[in-house]
Image 1: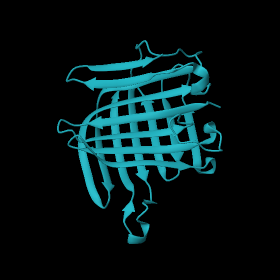
Image 2 (image 1 turned 120 degrees about the horizontal axis):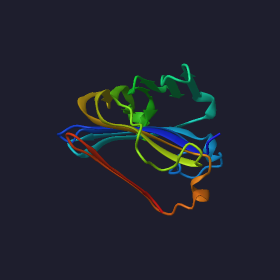
Image 3 (image 1 turned 60 degrees about the horizontal axis):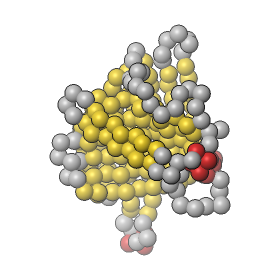
Image 4 (image 1 turned 180 degrees about the vertical axis):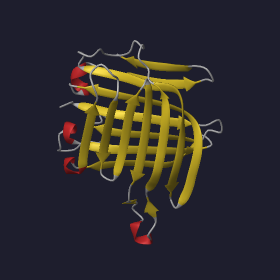
Length: 212
């Protein structure tokens, strides 16, 4: 079992409206807990409106509410279907004919400290993304490496249709999708600093991934 892993997707339009969604297991950035990190699962959703954070959710779930399903076709064809369900949230990923299709279904019901006022703090809706599968990028870690960073799609578009605080949030924009997986915990990887950034232009995407 991995020490930590996550699937990441972000979407940004030209007006600064954006969305970041992460499905994770053993996320290194979770607060301290007596539960082993590799047994901690979470969904993180951040929504931006015109460049400003409008919504933030980091919701943890017990292992009993997590399900992962994977199916592959003949080894000579690159067709793969994967579904990661954490609580009421689901991340579907389908790779076929050199294209990555991602569909995220979000359904949460979390209340803030002002619960007595009946003010719900939840996110519901979908993120849909499709783009060419990256297959020739020299990245962090090979198939046999203990830690792998795997960018899967950069030059692609996505549709966001969500509801937060009883308000609809819908936009389309350029999207990015990657995953991280490590068989060792972060402390044992001798990583003191971790920088990541991306910038999407009309015909290319710049990625920065630096660990020391």
